[in-house]
Image 1 (cartoon, rainbow, N blue to C red):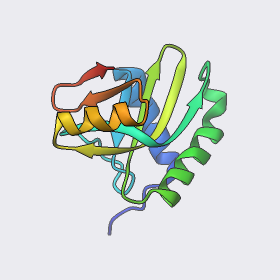
Image 2 (cartoon, helix red, strand yellow; image 1 turned 90 degrees about the vertical axis):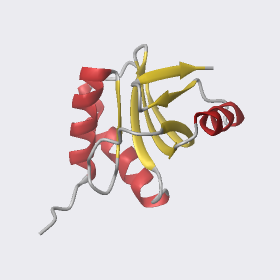
Image 3 (cartoon, helix red, strand yellow; image 1 turned 135 degrees about the vertical axis):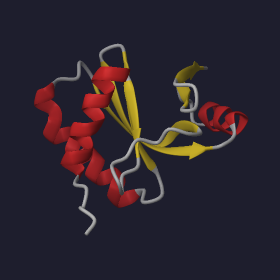
Image 4 (cartoon, rainbow, N blue to C red; image 1 turned 180 degrees about the vertical axis):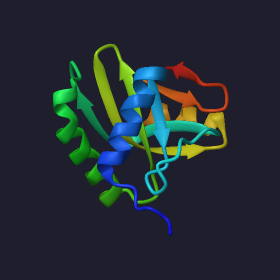
Length: 121
């Protein structure tokens, strides 16, 4: 029987990966990392300035909202300085499409999951 992945489970896993790698892209249904394609935000974004572990309940609420309101999006966590971004993101197989979406929505960057590299705009 498949275990239901809670929003708290997702936050804990995403934070562990973010501490290790600077960010994480997870499938919100399975909790598994997404490792192929180009991740781009612009759908829904939550910012945690000077991110601290004490904000874990707020982060969990943000993930719940993303899962409820954006059922076809992946979940993205990434650090930019001391700001943690928690995003509903799209993953596309085309880097050029990701760049266009990122520019259109005024994103700071998008992420190449294939190479593990951030592409700043």
